[in-house]
Length: 322
Ligand code: FAD
Image (cartoon, rainbow, N blue to C red):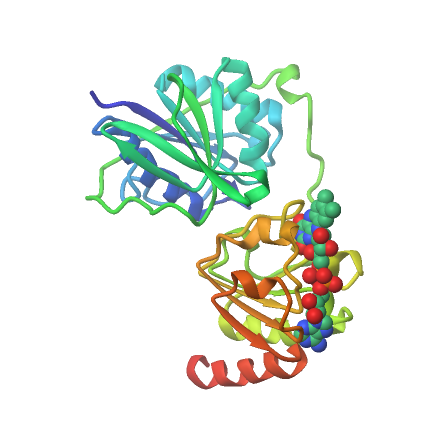
């Protein structure tokens, strides 16, 4: 029998992030012919055609109290929609918001949670979720112990829905937020001037380590990233040295990324860095030390000085891409 699946859309700066479509893809698999519901929480969110993305029903909460994420107000909205949908599975993105909100909701409902899912396989109609353990050194498969349960989905890993477009019904939900729901109020969001492509959704990342030697040393990497339409990332070594902002840090204590192409420049390949990027589909390493551990996981390795190699790559890519 089909199931009810609830996807909580991942909204950033008033728009849905790609991971929402990836969650809708897996939600359709989990539903097994049942109904896929998506909750869109925010204020004046730009909502695309979610029927084409695999949703049967859209639950839209458009409220100024949801303009910026706060756990108490968002929890209230998710719990209200949960009561209406009565789902067997609730999916959140494994993003900054989802990582905070999912456990809050799971705790309130007394549900179990499977976090940071990178793949789903089925044994009959029973799902098996793949997730990393030991800071990404290994992966394990987890079967849910009962329903309902909560899942967080790592961006850039699962395929969007590719079935026939559905004609989704939209429900406008209006909520009244009382004082306890507004325990936290965001007065202002000050954006860091890192700009460019969002690291966690980027298809290509050019990343720099301590080998770039200075903040200016990131310039050739930024030029290469511009030509490729890539995001710029960094190791903690580069962040600690003050060469770049910590918002760029990739790894165990930074962001986890899974781009199609990861170009590591002047990064040694410490296990804590690999924890954040080893699931990249193709890894290119540029390092002047042929013994650098990064070469052990790289698909392509270039032994050389990044200040010579990176500008050469930029010139060659310009010939074909610009
Ligand atoms: P280094 O290890 O110093 O490597 C620099 C590399 O650049 C060397 O391999 C060198 O050969 C090469 N190089 C130098 N000059 C050039 C050149 N001109 N051309 C080409 N190559 C050159 N690290 C992370 O990255 N992310 C994390 O989230 C993270 N979390 C951590 C959490 C904990 C609890 C701890 C203990 C550590 C964590 N670290 C993390 C730190 C990690 O252990 C490493 O210290 C760090 O990743 C090293 O950064 P790096 O590779 O840039 O620097």
